[in-house]
Each structure stands twice: as C-alpha cells, then as structure tokens.
Image (cartoon, rainbow, N blue to C red):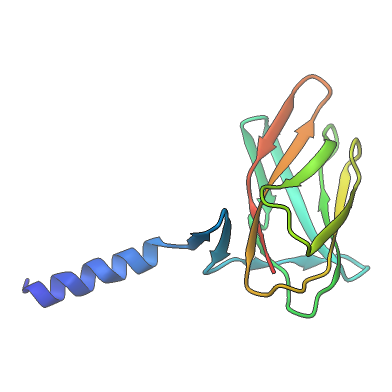
Length: 141
C-alpha cells in the first residue's frame, strides 16, 4: 500500500472514531439521536436502570430540535427516584434553568435553547433508597 493510501485510511479512521469534540468542558457532538416527544411536545429522555453500574439515558446523546423550547424531561422506571439534585450540568449554562423533580421519577429543566449546536454534559443522580448511582450523558441544543 502506498503512502498516500495509508494516510487516507488513517484519516478516515480518525474521523470515524471521533464522535465528539470537546471545548471548554462541553462537547459539540457530531452525531446523536433526536429527543422523543411526549404528548405535551417536550423532549423526553428515558433513563434505563439495570443496576447501579448499568445506567443509560435513551437517547444517550439527545439532540433537541432547533425550534424546541420548553422543558426537557428525564423519566425513571419504578423502584428508582432522582436524587434531590437529579440532573446536574457539568458546566451550568444560561439555556437551562428551573430544575425540579428531585425525589421523584421525573426530573425537568427548562431549555431556552438560545445557543445552537452545542452539547452539554450532565450527570444523572438516582437512588433506590439504599444506594445512589450516577451516569454521564450529553444533551445537544
């Protein structure tokens, strides 16, 4: 294989392997999954819990549509509740305000969606009354 072909192959692998670019602690996802919408038309993220070490957000990188302003809602299955600070953004941002829902199966943040094409890392904190567990997904405006 010649040198040009190898450089091309390495470049393609690097591009394919990079799903996010990090900038100042937040991310600019290059791909993700659009939020599902409940009957109220707001972004709904389902949290799946198999155990304290097996937690996922669905979608894990949630893409919020450009004109979608309002609450983002995270929902938990039975047996689990969000901790008092159930969803915590790693780098608080003015797009997100009015967190509510601690100690329940539903947690909400209002999303003003003013900044576009920026990912926001956050941590989900949940409890079953005996243990508190965490998971770190991303939401993309």
